[in-house]
Image (cartoon, rainbow, N blue to C red; front, side):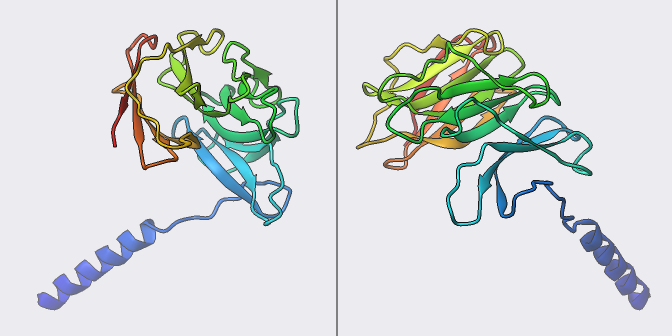
Length: 233
């Protein structure tokens, strides 16, 4: 009886281990050494990912890949923001056809950076101009939506305050967040590109500053037009 129980337990363990194995999937990028900068999961079938150059040459990459069949196939594309010198911080997807990308400056000029959207699966990308990010100190970092309409985007501090915008119409109109929130900046603190954790159910996003280990908690109401920032060291 003990032997039967032992072999039954062993068979169950082997079956569990076998079912827990990871399966490699091809991103289908044509260039060698393409890495994944960030994933954006829409549902069990639809996932987008932005790319970076992993060859060591530090080439600027404006590319994405996407699956709509749970990873069985991936289709790559270009995040064409009209300026090949801009870096791509991250991608945030809402469906198989709609996604947002954050483009940041890689020079002393902020020209052209900001939030871009595609509504045709990544074929064309359009800058949402009301998320300005055009002052001399601007540097765009992240974008996040709690639902199809309500979202926010964040950039490095300008005049001592993070450059934040909210939207209630999917980014057609972005509204600047007024200052006065309780974030204490340390040294030359700025935001980190693509580093955030969102909770759609609780309308909360956690952002990470790059100085002093500060964590910034952003809370938006269900309408998406109220933002509270708190320093959570």
